[in-house]
Image: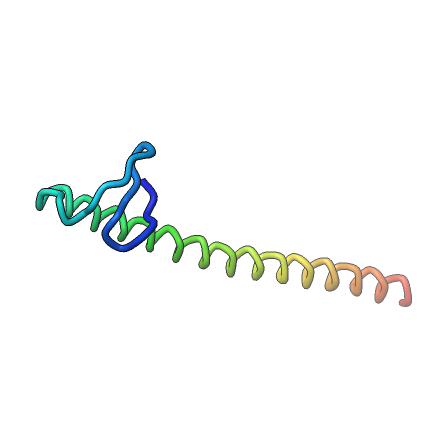
Length: 74
């Protein structure tokens, strides 16, 4: 399902006016929209966590390398 405007959805290449849908179909559309919104939120959160993970990985690498250098200097 893709949306081109608020009241039109494309299903299997055919455009449909949501205003002609039954209440059940409109409810399903609303649930799909909630799912799409949640997926976008989760993807944004995942991106934040992945960036944080990389920062912590880099910090660990730097800390281990600094520790090695300190041991060599001793």
